[in-house]
Length: 77
Image (cartoon, rainbow, N blue to C red; front, side, top):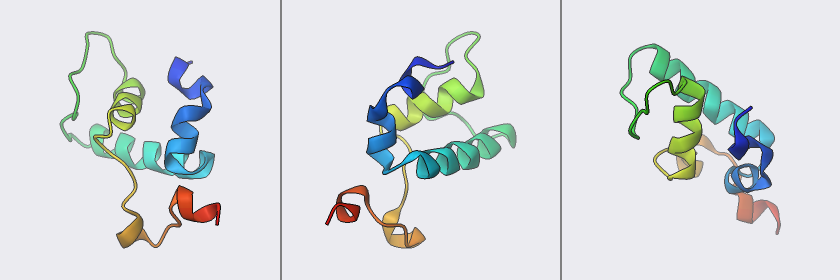
């Protein structure tokens, strides 16, 4: 299991496990279809590890404006 997924930091960053899962799934499809990784792929690194690294480095995220998804900070109000 990827260590970053054990932490709540990545979950809170996106506003919940469902949003995290949806983002991971969408980006995994893009990588499988041939999109270039936005971070340097280390030897032996899986697509899942690449996606998690992209999220942690703020290379990908949810476009809350276009997706009509509630921002994490707005959900607390």
